[in-house]
Image (cartoon, rainbow, N blue to C red; front, side):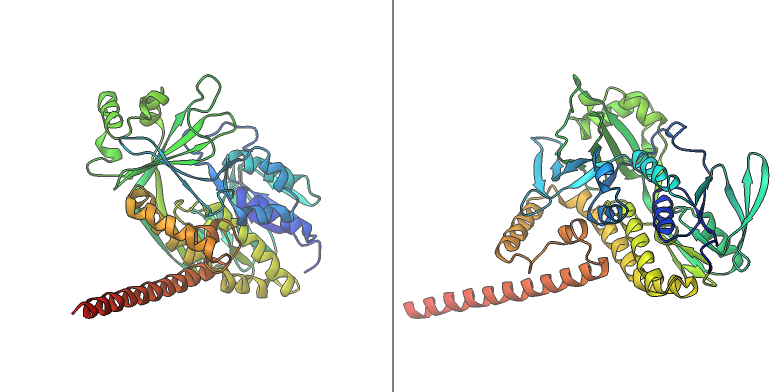
Length: 442
């Protein structure tokens, strides 16, 4: 491949723009195709923000292109969870044993715009908005797009799909017969609400991710630079206490007064937000292979979308870009070798974080408010202090390191197995001691 061969990246979202930056750094001309208009010139779609929790994996990728400091200017560090019970005072749970490590609340739109600016400022990168992919020949690299001016075609030596969970590139490969996919949707959806500033200040502690765990449902809230909070309801889509069960303003007000009483005085637009913001779907996307003919590839959500409950969707996609860049290094920019290698390197990790994200939904929804969970976290932090570097919690490994996700799962299982053995031994010793003491009294 010569340096003049253009790479097509379909999707100018977070992963696509970051990928364009990495490819341009390697000397490739890049064409970014995006089905939407330029997000820097338009308005944000109502109720579709879902703030990002940017953590170490995402920051590592941004550092590699010198964008981390700029992005972090508007980020708000969250050092733990603030648990809001139905009754009583909120309780803070630190994410790290030291209490100083944080995940960072950041606007998806602001991050996308920063990455888009960075990409288009690089030589050789061009972007075509309002281009919706409707046809793809994986062998010849010919793409067909619907645009406001009608259908247009373009070709590229390599086509990379970074166009999200509903990927048009994946859909074209599926129609071509190049891959299989599975879509595992939850019986849950999400809807956003807003807590505005009060007197120009945050209505809640901005140093925490706020959670209202309610057993079969929950709400979270993340702070914004304008001192508001974006709240996200994660509720069942059907049945009692579901999105389908509330319709009238009176019913909405009664429900929130009963189940989220501390939210009501903080959210003056609660009913309007609830009635008019859309309900989004939640699910896990799996497909294989992630590439066809060594010329068309998928990454990020296009290859392996996950549910958002570990805050790792964007972080994982950014890590994909870093790993693909490594594979290109190792394969001397031979895409036919690099794309299969990329899948071998990342597929186990993608599956691991998909499973951990689903499990974390149960933890956030059902467990964080329980005394047993709080005790477990206290013991876990004590072990981390007693065994620094040897015992590290799953949350810290996922959020504050770049340890591969699959290795995180293996390490945590080993830690739990060791702890179980130690606990069993301690119980046996205690039982033996009690038995000896009793025999001595006879």
